[in-house]
Length: 302
Image 1 (cartoon, rainbow, N blue to C red):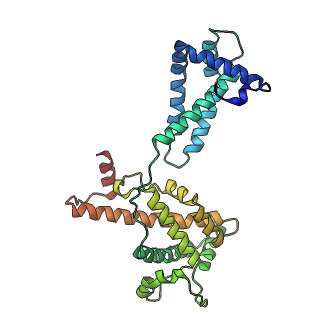
Image 2 (image 1 turned 180 degrees about the horizontal axis):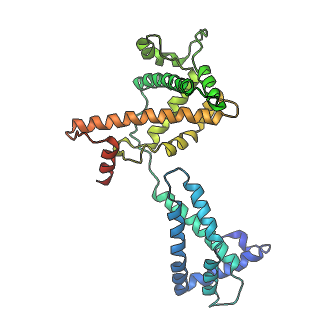
Image 3 (image 1 turned 30 degrees about the vertical axis):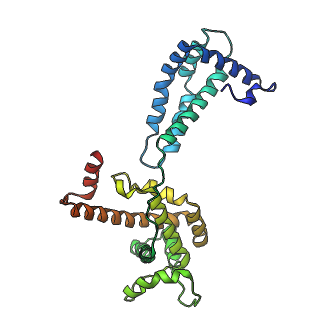
């Protein structure tokens, strides 16, 4: 707060006052201790209220801090401590102090939980992309069946059904692309019922897979690793996902269509990780008949 050059300018009346007060507080160790003890429980409550598993942590944090800034009791307590040295107007200082402390806490918390990207994350090889091509067609098929089975007059489902039809590869298009080489396995296993996705949809799903590999540590899977809500949000925030989505989906339900595809992909991917984990446990002699989620919860506790 003292090093802010803007507050030292002549045009900043409250700024000079804030700098002067901060200097006095920094030199008084007893006052700093008292203020710290008063602020600590309030900010602890802010972050405690923000903890959420529904993907709304940022909104909860903002709302909780906003309530703190409106708390006249806290502001009065801090001002009463500051008045022991002088009779100046301390309200601007208290407001800046709360916001500066919040920024610092968020920065420190982010650094604490920062996860370094695993440099050993396995890149996508040719076999992986053959499978992703198949999954892309499966997603189109499953969402189409879901819309037909619902037999609903929902405008959203009708738009989704139409979008899935448009995401299929146009068989009359004879143009060759680099994506064709990943369709080999799908064509070999096809007996007439598999869906062949368009190039852009395959690239969209491939980008979802790449995001999952970046975000999830397969060596340390636990019950919260595959939180679908949070993982879907991270995927939808990817620049390339937005790029391909803009090509594929349009209209007022574009976001709904993209989210439906990503949710189904995350579900399929979650089952694949689960089967892989069970297979590893079986190979290590840890096979049991417990539900996988319960096993993961027990594994997390260890």
